[in-house]
Length: 298
Length: 298
Image: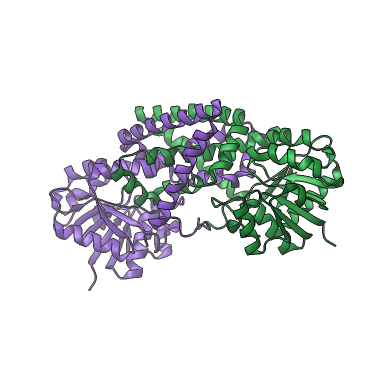
């Protein structure tokens, strides 16, 4: 017996298409409806055969579904909610994959007649590639999926969404939405902002220097270019929708880099060594927590 | 016929021990002398059987060598040069692997009687691990090795050192020392400084938040922890010895992050999207240049 009869996935990019593949691979639903506002994406999803039905219309796509998964950029939530609300089947559970939770909840709630069936979620997984071709069924395996249910969310709805992600190989963590947004501001949003900045700084150099920077990027820079290759629209929306947490943690970062800057200027070697030694121990904890990149050599 | 008869490698950490393994694997020298001031490292090198001779004494180790490779942290160059100078065989070529070139040259030159046999070098390769156990013969394969010969350096010496690195699988680039230091400040030194900073910022958080940051580090942060796990002494010395270039590029970075910070504060989505789109294209150029991490999945 499948977990869901008919799952609508709204937004069929990296995350949406990976979830569809994982649902198929693990038999988590009887059928999948792919919904994407882009005709090109819909055509490609048909070619790849990733869903049982493909449509550009949310109203049409969610008919008869018992689960709707919103997997669009955070800035598109209001538009999706307006279309989705009136056509949502009465018993349909709604979940999402947005990287910011508080603002996503605020965008969705006013348009849902049954808030007890809203289970906000965020799978901590991704690559720097976008679109339905970039997805793969194993994307969520061994990763966390954070759920941030509201006080009014029904326990049965949470259990079913949790079972879906567990079926795709993820482990579940339950969190307050605002806490999620703070933790992700540090672990994800600030790193991306910094990676975008440093890659931009390098891009502004004189052309011959810029060419050398590309050529010798293996010395650290290339890791930043990978992070900074992530989807621009998705990241624009994240920064606009998690503004306060991002600006607060960025302020702390700025203070810390000023301290290191001054230590370098004054030649304070002992201080630098002590700071760097401390950072090394954090890496050990990441490895112990099983969160080091399994595909990286070291 | 081997390229060198007897190679002394001074400093037997990640780089020194990897070079020794590469020399053996590719038959680039008849014998290898491992020199390290640490008795523990010397004992371990003997256990691992990585060299034909192992000694803590530079004076003793370089006897009869036709190549000496300095692979110690940049801050230890003066001490090494003082010991090495008087005992260097007349025909012995000297090269190094230091991540900063101008200051390394300045530390070595006064102590060498034959500056025409000094070939400063820097293989653009490494991992976040340290010590003789961390080395492997393939570390330099497909990577660049930058040589920064002086006006007085003999062409034959440059050719022989180039042949050594090529034999280990690297490609050679010739550069001015100061230009090397500027390019590396951008591609390597600034990324490491930023990674150290952001990991430090996270370490200063309240304990429960810090635990969550470790737990959910797969969303970007973990890549920074890997970079920030690099050898603290090596990096202390790099920042102290490439101070001007690092501070200059850090200044540009600070200006750029302030611009993005203001754009987030003011909600300027179009500006952010445009900046992020530009960064994505840099990643494509890194991949085209063949410098993407071959061990990373994406």
